[in-house]
Amino acid sequence: MWSYRIEEYGEPLVRAEGPTPAPRGTEILIRTTACGVCHSDLHYWHGGYELGAGRKFTLADRGVTPPITMGHEPFGVVEALGPEAEGVEVGDARAVYPWIGCGDCRHCRDGRDIDCAGMRTIGLFTPGGYGSHIVVPHARYLLDADGISPERAATLSCAGLTAWSALRKAGPPRPEDALVLIGAGGVGLSAVGLARVKHEGPLLVVDKDPAKLDAARALGAEQVFTAGEEDAAGRIREATGDGAGAVIDFVGAPDTFRLSLDVVRRGARIVLIGLYGGSTRLPLPILPLRNISLIGSLTGTVGEMRELLEFVRAHDVPSVPIERRPFAEASATLADLEAGRVTGRVVLGE
Image (tube, rainbow, N blue to C red; front, side, top):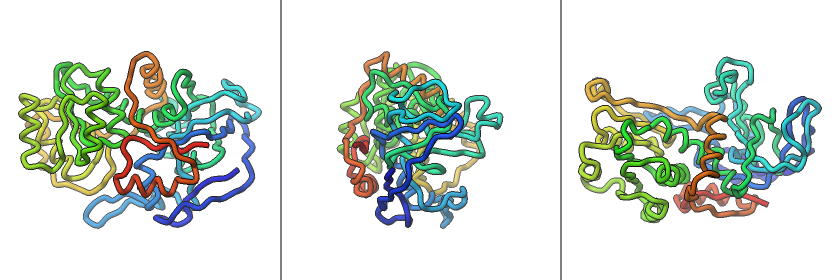
């Protein structure tokens, strides 16, 4: 098998070749046909997350060191089964749920692998979809995406799932409430398309890139606002009446968190997803005095991914713009993503 992997943080990925693994026990070998490139891959590529005040949370802190084959949005075809594997057959095309836990703790038993302290995430802790093959530990992490293109199905395992789970957490509390989405990258635009079908109230999007705001309009955003403009918060509050019922922050920077607080009404929800990084000073009485709920959200459960696939199949959900590129362009794609030259999602493929 071959893969494009991190050997030194921040440097171009290196193509490596080695033996194709043989699945054991309940494992399934998947030949990768498509894999989305996610903004989280930039953090992995650079070795960690900025926490603000000069602090950084590194991959080494999580027990991960190079070489690392990234790619947590894989789609592929079953090529081989371990002797105890059931539920799929060789030749089946499947989307892969990558957020895999230890399988034994209470979170995993409840179907919440994402809360497991012993994660084995595909594309971080185990080799991911920037390679010809991946090993999936059990068939429960393989989902039938019949009726959805492989390229789009790949993006649903992270960008779509993260957006779906955040929308479920956000509510908003009342159907008529305005929903504000901050950040129109791949995940934010996924949320726009889903929210336009799922949400009854006004849908507003904030970003600094005019091309991404145009994409948000095309997907159904009713109003868009340029981040950083003078009195952007005041204009958004005016557009929402007494303030937004919910905000989802897909950036996760001090400025976007401040904007979230400035545009929500009393009793609203703020869902924080983005991992841009940094820290902020928050007067704690603000939350109880305004009855604001602050919710952190990291991707979603395998059950939520099943719900998402069913929802996309059952409704005319507009897709984010998707550009297909060959696997050999993985490094160039990371550079383009970091420079803001990607609108929507890039999917690597054969």
